[in-house]
Length: 349
Image 1 (tube, rainbow, N blue to C red):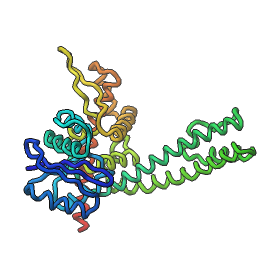
Image 2: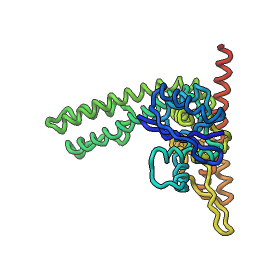
Image 3: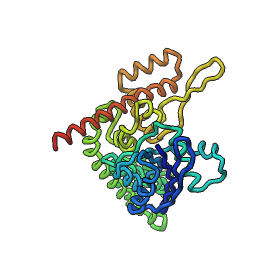
Image 4: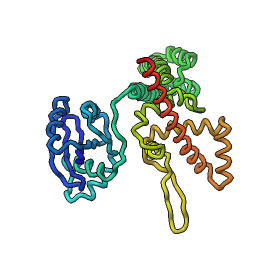
């Protein structure tokens, strides 16, 4: 078995081959087209038939490469960037270059045999693209509303729309703001009017994206939507960011990936755990939203939090424990949704 570590860039990919002991066997730099990737496969065949490709987990750069390798029946694993730092530090070669980084990727994959495996993109990526685009539009709307409020303050410090009224697509408050701005002349009023028009436009686009997301999420993740506190947007974030739960070997690996697995911090005779700030923070935020809702409305979650508090946990520690349990629930729901989708496709075939 040989490991082929890949340092991916926009125009080139650098590949370094290592054996089972981490010794460098070969190196090559290729382009980023499908034809280049096929040539890379031919070159890699000289190192034997048992190969595993290790790619730094930056899918905006490596998506085409992964797709071509998986289409050719190759095994591909994704290496988190933080693992490369330790491999570079332990190496005998100083500096930072594409071959050095590719070697670090290969040795990190050799050191960590149970990394997440790459899979071909499916419907979950479409959901992630829609969610990311919606997040960008929401952030843009927030920036515009902030600038608009300063213009409104300059026009009349005593008049301002209620907090969050413009970002929720309230027709009444936006119309009132538009009418207020129309009473003034000058450049400030002109700019404020343009900002109001842009908020109108963004509200329509955001609402349309949410309407497009709902049927996709209901078809792809019905088990997630059945969870208390998991709405369409939260389920879309979980499904899109997870990108096929089958690439995680267990619920514990998934908890480590989403940052809900607590970190052991033992000192002397005291054993405790603290918050993990690693992992996918978007997934962590989605699980946190579910936890907040269940802490208010779900009887089982409320009893669990009360039991943890009675056992000596602080409110923060109790919520952290609830999030860890919810990570397992989300993992099982994602697995159930994949099984349901596979059965549906089999029946349709």
